[in-house]
Image (cartoon, rainbow, N blue to C red):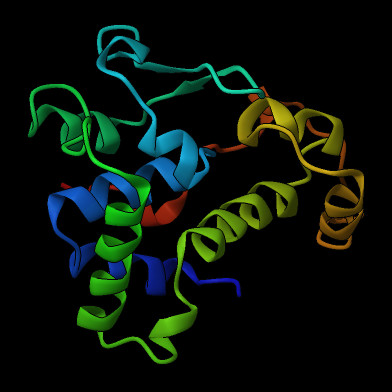
Length: 170
């Protein structure tokens, strides 16, 4: 399920700090597993980067909004020692509290899917997509190709990485 910018904004506004941080990480290209396993030393607020050290290592830029959310909890996610199941619960609560229809369909995969579609619709080269969102199976990349505009093949530096839902969230 793809969520619109407005739906994502409503979801963010209904979230706790934990939910906001998780949603912002998903809208930055991390999976819920990557977000759950983040350690404080992977986050560099001065350089505004997150170093993902999973099987799909990469460096992700931290938006001003995500930086602000991290600063509210000492510079790292509030869940540093929690399990990803707790993060799933935080998302479910935010989805229900938001009042959005079909809240059961609003989960980490839907949020991340919405971000990937946002990137692809800008014409991002599909070969560059994994630099932002990590490994994707060939069939998944093929699926996302249907969202590519006719004017595609833009490099990462030529597209907007900040999802509109994250503008001025705190």
